[in-house]
Image (cartoon, rainbow, N blue to C red; front, side):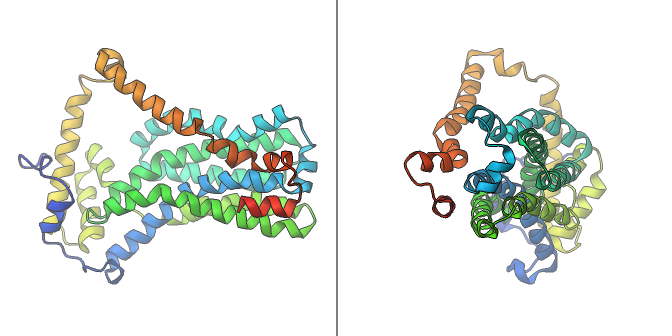
Length: 330
C-alpha cells in the first residue's frame, strides 16, 4: 500500500505539528500516550544495563572478597574476563539484526533481556575466574541482542512529536545505569561477606527485568508489521497509541502512508543493493572507512581503561583503600 506522492519528502517533526491529532497536548494527561511513553521508557533499560556494567567492574575490583573469589588472577586473565561482555556482544549484533527483521523487535528484546537476567543470576553464584568469564560472555550476548532491537523499537513506536527527544535520551540513560552500579558497589562494600560482590552482580538483572516487564506495555513496531504485509495491525497500533483508537485521525493516516511508502521504496532499493555496495565505488569505501574509524576512535579514546581499570590504576598511585576506590568510582 503506497501513499500519496511527496509524503516521504515532506516528512519531519514540522509536518506532524500541523496535523490534527486526537491526543491531549500534555502527554501525561493522555491515556494512550501515557501508556506508550511508560513502555518506551522501559526500553531505555538496555542502555542503563550497559551503563551498569560500565561501573560494575570498577566497583567489584575495589571489593577484596571479589578478588579472592576470582583467585587473584594475573592481569592478562583479568583483562580477558573484563572483555567477556564485549566478546559476547560483538558477534551477537549481526544475527540479532537478521532475526529482528524476521521475528520482530519485541522478540529480540525479550530474548536479550532474558539472557541477561539468567546470566546475572548465574554470575551471583559463580566461583573462580572462568565461571565468571562465562557469565560475562552470556551477558554480552544478551546485551547485544537487546541493544540491537530496543533503539529501533523505541524510535518506531514513539509518537512523532516526541520521537526526537526520545531518540536523544536513549543513550543518555547509560549514565543512570552507571551511577546506580557505583552506588550499589559502594553500599555493599560494608557488608563484609561474599554478598558484598554477589548483590551487585545479581542486580545486573534489574534493568533487563524492567525491560521484560515493559514489553507488556509496548506494541510491535508498526514499521516491521508493514514490512511483513500486516497493514491492518500496523494501522490499529498507530491509532491506539498515537490517536486513542481513531483510525481516521489525520496524523495517524499520514504516518501510516509514510511508513508504507518508505517500505516500498526500501524493497525496491534492496533488489539492487547489498553489502557489496559498501565496496562498489571509491566514495562508498571512503564512507565505510569513516564509519569504522569513528567507532574505533571513540573506543580508543581511553574511556574503556577508566571504566574497567580504575581500581588497579588507583592502587598503582597509592590509593589502596577500598572505600576510597569505590567512592572515586561513584
